[in-house]
Length: 367
Image (cartoon, rainbow, N blue to C red; front, side, top):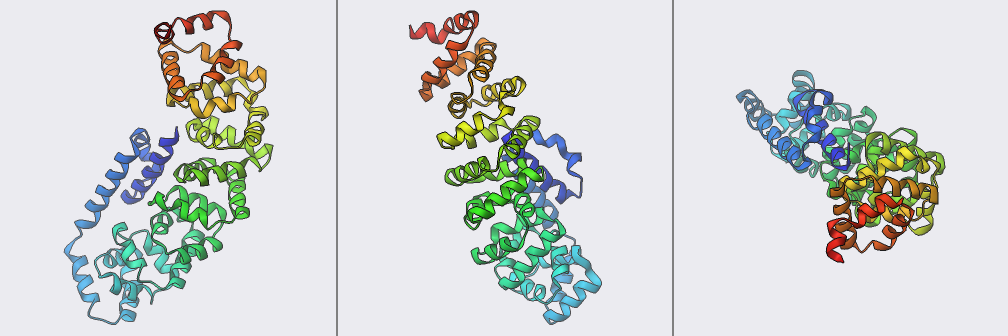
């Protein structure tokens, strides 16, 4: 798995919900570009909701003929959550909002997951804020984070703040990971004071939710990512080690390294001196990930802070790379002007790989 695969995995979970399938049944989608999966999800929504049977249209028309309170009773006793949501998607948003306001919060929460995602904004805008907050809390209590991810991007800031204050840290992580409108992540993080954000990060460690936390950090702007990185460093060695193990196990170095690159010098040194980052297998996997994703710029500042034995492992791993990958590295280093830390690594290499590197076309042409 890599950073893009985190997004692809989230998209796969959303598609599975639409199709009534288990995410594991669609695991073959994880390797596809997230943008393609999102487009497929949107096409799936259109196919499912635009070809509704005439019966739904007739029910929707009939619903307009009775008071909202009566329509709410019919929804509960005759239609149920799924069918009620299908009908709501065919009503004018104002009318749907009137009926929803008469329903129990538990029924509305059960119906939300079946609503046409394209109709959410119009309906949410017509609901009272207190009701929106109560429904959000009910969804969190039900563990329906995917539906929360559909809705949260449409909430007004005041409703969002109230909901965040009432839901737990696990729900924040899981909902952020599944959010349909990632451009709202910074708005959500803005509502979290430093102590709450630190608590969310601790929860990521304690509940094995580091992939979700990295996905959220990846959607955030650079300033927010930097804050997340700094707070993570302050959670102690044990929790930081759990982050490294999670990244190692799931192949998420390309999600973590750009975040680490935003740390200040002292925090970067703290990370570099973690015992888990002195392990040869871990360092070799990091080098492989750096090569695959072209992450030399965020990686090399961290390497400079590693103890010399660990830097020697990195140097040896780099020296074992095929010529084509070393050539690509040289061009990337030239483009990013990273020669100083690279030369420090070259000094730690044995003579044979060093000679092979300087025999590359890049260096021959430069000379």
